[in-house]
Amino acid sequence: MHTRTVMLDGESLGLGDFLDVVYGRAKAELSCDAKRKMSDSRKHVESVVDESRVVYGITTGFGRFADVVISADETRELQQNLILSHACGTGPAFSEREVRGMMLLRANALAKGYSGVRIRVVDTLLKMLNEGIHPVIPQQGSVGASGDLAPLAHLVLVMIGRGKATHRGLTLSGDKALKQACIEPVVLEAKEGLALINGTQAMTSVGLLSLKAAQDFIDSADIVAGLTVEVLRGIPSAFDARLITLRPHQGAVESASRLCSALKGSRLTTSSGELRVQDAYSLRCTPQVHGATRAAIVHVHEVLRLEMNSATDNPLVVCNPDGTRDVISGGNFHGQPVSSAMDYLGLALLGSAGISERRIDRMLNPVSSGLPAFLTRRGGLNSGFMIAHYTAAALLSESKILASPASVDSIPVSASQEDHVSMGPIAARKARDIALNATKILAIELMCACQAADLLGPEMLGQVGAHTYKLVRKVVPALEQDREIHEDIEKVTQLLQAGELLAV
Image (cartoon, rainbow, N blue to C red):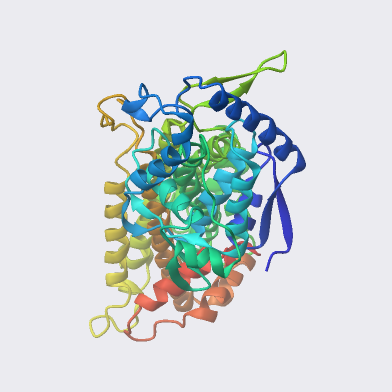
């Protein structure tokens, strides 16, 4: 149920607003100022058509056909043909949350008032969003340069009463979904089809949801690592602020502070020289590795914050100081800023996922842990967490392959009119998959740490560690003897995704 309304003005949409709408906690509407700006720019587009001026995308074809002039009485057919011809995506569909994000972001970009579309068009898009009509959009097909053309064309298909959509758990034709919600299909006028599909909203929506997953992952990773440090009898002095601030990367300072808080009151941690002089890197260097991931998240957040409040279609109706307007063609649709940022996010997540896997290995190896091999009391008869580590290793290896950057690739398209592309949607989907893999690896580390706590005595844990242990034990029992644990991994993954560990 919607508990509030997010007013779209094209300037001030934040991550919190985005998530509230995507998760159905808020509805979205156009602000009065947005409507005024949209109305002004639409008048200019109509004057271009009335005066038969040759302007790209309004009175011409698209891409390589930019030099083909279209008559005024063909503008509706031109815009509909654009949507029909560009809706050629393939592969599995985006999730409903990803689609909701695309719808919201496209509406917000148009709300800036530089795209020249009618208010009714965006109102229809927002009615669909608020009524839970979600176009079925294939994930593959966008190269991320002239915007996310194929995915957004599938979105617009439903707006014009075509394509497919999900509504109240059912998959319906676009026209039936609109009828159920009493929404009239849109008949696209000059420039409107192009304005709806010429943008970076598919990659940005996936990117924002990946960013949220990354934020939850790294905050949870500090807590999970703290529990691992406890059960491995680690040395907390490595996280001392007097040491960390001598190399004051903000992310490392924050992670070190969180680790110190997580270890307060623990009766398991040790001092240098008590059991060992110093810990292995996978414990001792946790703030530095987690901190690098944090720094990447901060950077990606800033890139996506700018992107979600930008005009990314082409051409755009710009304002002159004297109040007149011009239509200018450019490249604001090019996804390179998002593509590069998403590759960076994937790489940064991989560092923290990798160190998590190393901590798993240290807990399962009796030489480094001082605990029973694979954390089972009856080894040999039982394998314990032996193969859970294999799963973590497989997830990590897969993520390393996914981390190969997409943003460095480019394949010319449209008869080389569009001769450099970003592959931004691929970068965003890879970052999303890496974030999920990283969370599953962290879930396995958390399960191992809780099993180790059972062997040592959970009453020895500090306050944060004890709280974390209890949360896990509410959904997953201790491993007394071998059982299927694939469901356990999923349950703990969901615990992490819900941010349960963060409410300490």
